[in-house]
Each structure stands twice: as structure tokens, then as C-alpha cells.
View 1: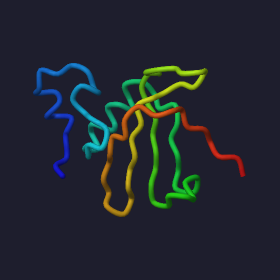
View 2: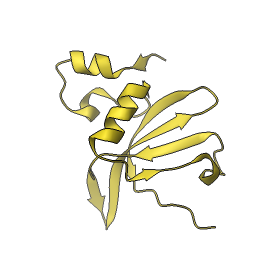
View 3: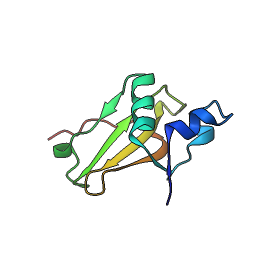
Length: 100
């Protein structure tokens, strides 16, 4: 699977993030950082917080895209430490920090 890059997005005539990047797309670090810096991340997991998926870190950034029954949905990305790749997962329900 090819990686979609921030440079490709900038060179395209497509203005909106989710019109260019689709759920399941591998993205480069610059695209990930753009989304995270555009609007500060509302959730970032750390390796120790993802016990069910070790080696995967999640970031939700950007503005709330949708709200259903009081649940807000945000653009979500994952970073896989073993392959050092980023993936855009789509607009998912708001994550919460786990309670231990």
C-alpha cells in the first residue's frame, strides 16, 4: 500500500483533509503532524495506555466532525511502532484515557 503524503495533498487541488485522506490510508509523518498541529490533539495515547494493542499509539486531532447522542467524533490516526507507519483511521468516537 502506498503512503499518501502531506506534499501530495498540498500539490492537489483538494482543500479538505478528509477529501484527500481516506480511512485506512497510510500517511506520512508530516501529514500526521499537520493534523495534530492544525488544532491541538484532544487525545494522544502512550504505549503504556494501549495494553490491548501494544506498540500502537492513537491521536485524535482536529475539530469535532459529528455528534451523535452526546458522543463527539474526531479525526483519528494511529502510529504503529513496529513498522514505524502512520494510518488515518477515519472519524471515530472520542477516546477517553483508560482508568486503572
